[in-house]
Image (tube, rainbow, N blue to C red; front, side):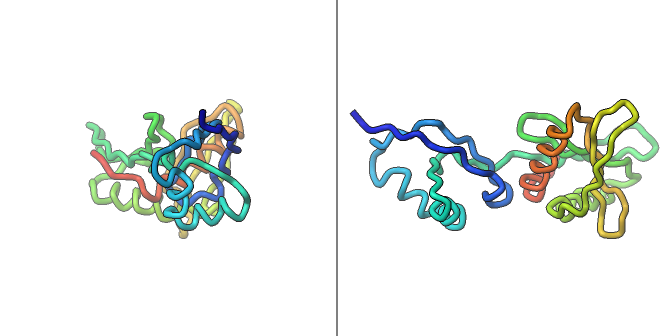
Length: 173
């Protein structure tokens, strides 16, 4: 019978951008070949972080987040807009409307560029007590506004997800 090890949760703040992890609580050490420990060495910086902080994890469960930047077209006078949608299908951020598609594409690129910097986030509270955020470009212009969140913690989690996943989001129509 193979030994089983309890595994601590990986701190996603130390993971490379765009990587999220689903960490199992128990790892089976009877894997074939070199096992998951050999795969850890192939992950470079994340493996170094794990070794330095004595964290173990199963790299086979690491996956690229599937956030998408979706361009939408409506019947409005300015018909183009975009939304950043996470891999669960939930919208995290929306844009204003644009007259031409190219402007929406530039807006997506601005969000991708600015979402990694904490200083670009403007934290707000709506009149109804719900929480949201704006992402601003370097010129101070708002390039995206989040959906409303019931708690500050949910808003913070959405910001973290934007910082980690949005820079690598695929663009769809």
